[in-house]
Image (cartoon, rainbow, N blue to C red; front, side, top):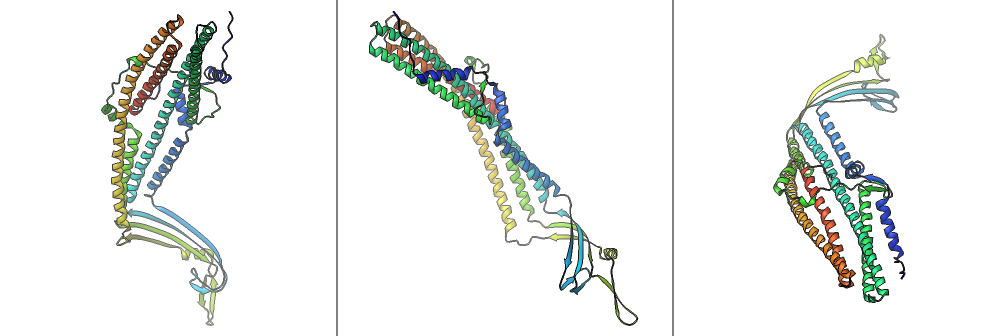
Amino acid sequence: MKYSKLKLPLFVLLAISVATNVFAQGGETVTLKQAVDIALQNNLQIKQAQFQSAITDENLKQSKFELYPSLNSSFSANKRFGLYFDQTSGGITSESSNTASGNLSTDINLFSGFRLQNQILQNKALLASDQSNVEKVKNDLSLSVVNTYLQILNNQDLTKASEQQLSLSQQQLGVAQKNFKVGNNTQADLSQAQAQVANNELSLTNAQNAFELSMLNLKQLMEMDPERNITLQVPVIENLETMESKYSGYEVYSKAVTNYPDIKAAEYSTKASEFGVKIAKGGLYPTLSFGGQLYNSYSSNAYDRAIGTGGQVISTKIPFSEQLNRNFGQALGFNLSIPIFNNYRSRSSYNIAKIRFENAKASEQLVKNNLNKVVNQAVQDLKSAIKSYSATQSAFNSSKDAFNAIKQRYDVGLANVIELNTSQTNYNKAEFDFIQAKYNVIFRKKVIDFYLGNPLTL
């Protein structure tokens, strides 16, 4: 007797074709390390953090140069008309004239309440804080890449499992159709088999969608063209059956607190605020500076006047070089500024700086407390994940054995299609739970490595 071939809906055939192409296509193979490196190289948030660090570095350089004497020069040349006082000739004139002047000045800060020195120390602390923030952004991104990478592998395994389950359901549907035609199965049995195929088709579609979405997320983290064709290298995963959580929250926290970028950034911010208090306090002290100046000027209306023998006034224009000799001046002096009352601004700035310092210390402790909570939660999550993996593995093996037993009974007519479908559904769920539990253990282990400062590789 001949039986008609099983016909599947067109969208299912297309979905299976797409999944086959996704996993079988050549494309560019990307390892986990390469994915992390590409993301670190292209991520815009990291570049922004680096730009901020570069700005702070320039601020540090500028604050160091504040200790050096300043040197400034100026020069002016003018054509004067109308009535005005000629500074160079020393008189009021209405004649048009050409004037020129120049000066060179310097100023040296001798004492300013150590504000300049403390500004340098504050900028050093701010630079260290910004550099730690760069590392923080890198670490957070690396962990996101690892998580997404594992999600892709998880969804890839779920897709393969769904394909296998769909193939099995299709075989069972074929058997049910044959039995229905010869009268061994009822219409209800055939409908149950068709419903099982439909459920497995939906599971496959959901797994494919999850895979494609997680792959898109990874490409976005790497700032990669979504149309670029890549495949992920499946790493050799350690034997999870023998894995034990030997970590304690205290042990992980003690190591994390010494190298975790968030902690370092908070500590350097506290130091910067401490130096801010000293800078503000320097504003309460007098400032002393020493300065010098060289200046010269020329005017076309500068004359030497003398009384002639007849009593008349004889005016002789002073040559340019002679004016430069006569008008060349020098000045040296000290400048002392004593703050007596400036509307409470300096005292208020000092008090605000002290409050900011106390707030920075509280923020630093808050970051440490949060890290302690997160680390202990991560350790507990790893322990729970290992237990869940062991439980799901036992459930998977048991449901697989149960399904095989029910199938053998069904094949000889000792079990009905409802029992078979129920057993297969339990088998499908147990397999999916086992796959997810496996990758959950791997990710939780990587989280612990993240806090310990270990490489985020598989």
